[in-house]
Image 1 (cartoon, rainbow, N blue to C red):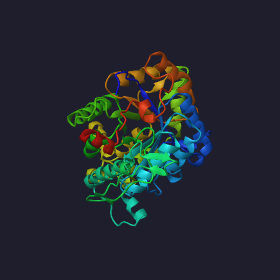
Image 2 (image 1 turned 180 degrees about the vertical axis):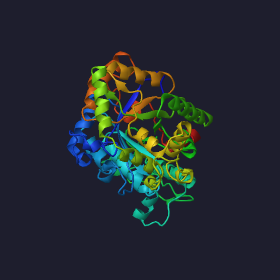
Image 3 (image 1 turned 120 degrees about the vertical axis):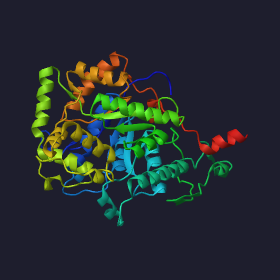
Length: 443
């Protein structure tokens, strides 16, 4: 990585919205999560604003408690492949779970996206934690939390091994001699591990960026260890700058102990900035968003963090129930943050639910105020960049037209794409093919 550090920006594509109530906004299309035209416009607007990447989240099960976006949405690699055809530079990051996928298929799918896009693919490696996901894949039980990360480590190792099946110059294509591929540079993986047996080779070569960029989004102890060892970028969800700084320092220290290259992994908190040309406009937009929310939204966030546990069975104004054991087997990072907040504020279910439903954060204000907050987080050890949610229709356009130019004027954000591949634009090292590297070392 170079020493020219700058803010990285990603846009999460969230259709009808992030919460349980966003879809009720008058300007929202209730079918937005399956509206390719909307995603095309958002992708092209983000590329106009020189965003580094688009990000598509995912899960593998839904029920009556799921938020509207997750009830009815595109599969990540499908929509990203379509968006690759209508964009030229922006990275394309898709979420795919290791818990219910086979490494060969995953390697092939992301390698295909990488070629379709000209080297712009990224894989957000996650483990599925909603327990009813198992039933969608013919399983009777869900792996325990610590086992999910053991599966993830082996799964990722196999996928990256398959991506290296072809050395970068394996495709000869010599029509005179009739040699299409150099067999000495096409390699079988022959992996036999605890969870997977995969022969290889993969039936598609490496792209111009070598391999897709590896993202990760866990924040539990196991998740942090996994990210420090394997991720090139981490999508996280701190609620305050103090929490973000602690997370940043902890993850970087874990990576340093593993002798990772300085600056890796990139740490990218998710934020939902609300911009107005005046403070009054920004406040009016925040109040517009807050008016959409309900207790149901907060209870939805709360329930999802505890494996869809039903909190309505309790007195909403009584003491918070003992549910730590549920959180330990679901989304540990989110559940533990909530439990800590409940303990610190002695909050009831109703109080924490309403707090979850209407967070304000640091990123509401005029373009200059939002840029100030981004700069403060970036320069004080809280973030290397941000993954942005569009909280209200029109906010992405305001951010691109008014916040991005300020960041560029301050020298904090690039004015144009400088390279052809996602990996180069992120300033993440090119992964040398393992077989080429081994041959060079023995030669």
